[in-house]
Amino acid sequence: MKKFVLAILLGVVILLIFAFPVLAAQAEAQAATTAQAPSVNWKAISAALAVSVSALASAWAQSKIGSAAAGALAEKPELGGIFIVLEAIPETMIILGFVVALLIMIMA
Image (cartoon, rainbow, N blue to C red; front, side):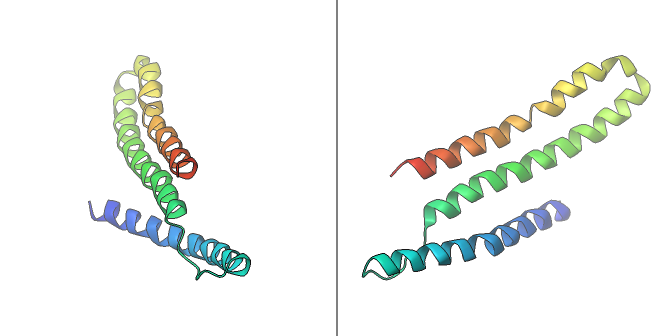
């Protein structure tokens, strides 16, 4: 569990490292075109979090499924097709996270 929490924290730190220069550049461009003070673009941060958190959760689920599949396939190799499907199911979580991020960016 500690590794999972550390992986999530590392993902958030990496996200912030890459997100803030982009947000700062966007705020400077906005301040140059208008007389308003630069503001934080919370839509971009929330969209990035929607994708990154779903990707981390999917990676964690696939690691658990993969280790279980390796053990089961050693005993029953005929179950290979089932485990391929079970490995693909968590990928839908990333797709849904991407859809949520698109909806966040498109809406208001």
